[in-house]
Amino acid sequence: MNELKAYNFHGKKVIDSRDVAVMVEREHNALLKTIRSYCEYLDQGEIAQIDFFIESTYTDGQNRTYPNFLITKKGCDMIANKMTGKKGVLFTAAYVTAFEEMRKELTTPQRLTLPEGVSLSGLARLISVTRRAMLDAGSTPQDVCGMIKETYSAVGFPVPSTLAKQIPGQMSLFDRPALQ
Image (cartoon, rainbow, N blue to C red; front, side):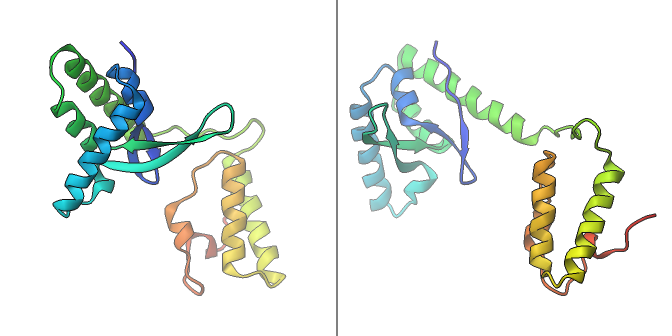
């Protein structure tokens, strides 16, 4: 049995229609035709097709571009509900497993580790000193946030979502005096 791999596309978990076609042993063009008909029905019912199927393209090894769809869990449900027998059961099992694995990856807390030779207190001090120097040199709070994001990324730390929403003049974690 082939395995499907779900991945994140702009906040939506999706599976590539090419992988679905292989899984259900169908020509990709035939699957695209079926999905397009589903999209027409969804449009007629004034239901957002993007919740099921996202039109996309891919480039082959010869740099030619072809259409495909990114299929959400709802889209996979729709395709699976139209299938019967062994193919339908195997496809349903594969896509449910793929989406469940991705959900687990997204919800499992990741243990953060610093590169060798870098301590958490050293990183905090570096950010604090750099922040102060930037502000003294006239940098904007947005510039400081950019520096902090780059520093976090450089050591493999996730960037706090609130850092992206920094409002000038608003006190943040990084506006507090550094600990000695």
